[in-house]
Image (cartoon, rainbow, N blue to C red; front, side, top):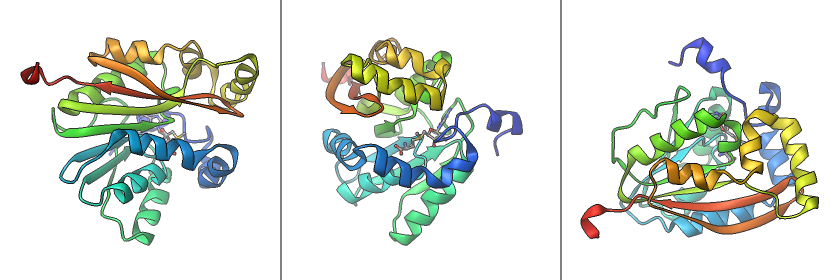
Length: 225
Ligand SMILES: C[S@@+](CC[C@H](N)C(=O)[O-])C[C@H]1O[C@@H](n2cnc3c(N)ncnc32)[C@H](O)[C@@H]1O
């Protein structure tokens, strides 16, 4: 059970707890949610028998999409917010899903080293301050097996003046402290600094709220070199 102080130290899905119940409704209307989540699932190419982690799974939409793409994989979602997880659990039950959902404390992941083949994270890193981003990336790399991949969808450097203006709305909602490094385009560099061997931007979505960028980081299997 997370310490009460820890529970305060995170930014909920729509910044305020009372808005969490409207998150799915808001995201599906304000963003091309199906398009970018499908692209993220598709680039990860999850196979039967693989173990997959959805870090910051929130209300579980992506987690369920990963399972639908490969029912033979073992899918685990973690989030700090019990309220978002309750929504994810209800959706999981309604879908007769076998995904497993856990509440975690901000910081360390409650899994052993090298225990996942894929780690997903969608719209989470802009909720984390710089040091939290670094800790989370290094934790995600730690739990990946050699040869494993991390697949991230998050805000990046706005590709135009208009997209920069749109991103101001995101920053006003989620706060400037955690989003400024995203706007500066620093996330790929942070992924490299966390020890990932290759970092590639795979896709860009121009949205009303800024430039959403899809990234892939690979933990090379030294044995295969
Ligand atoms: C914008 S929501 C994204 C939810 C989901 N991944 C999606 O794509 O719809 C951001 C999520 O990150 C979670 N979060 C914030 N800080 C976190 C942390 N330190 N560790 C894990 N999850 C965190 C929030 O609780 C929230 O559910």
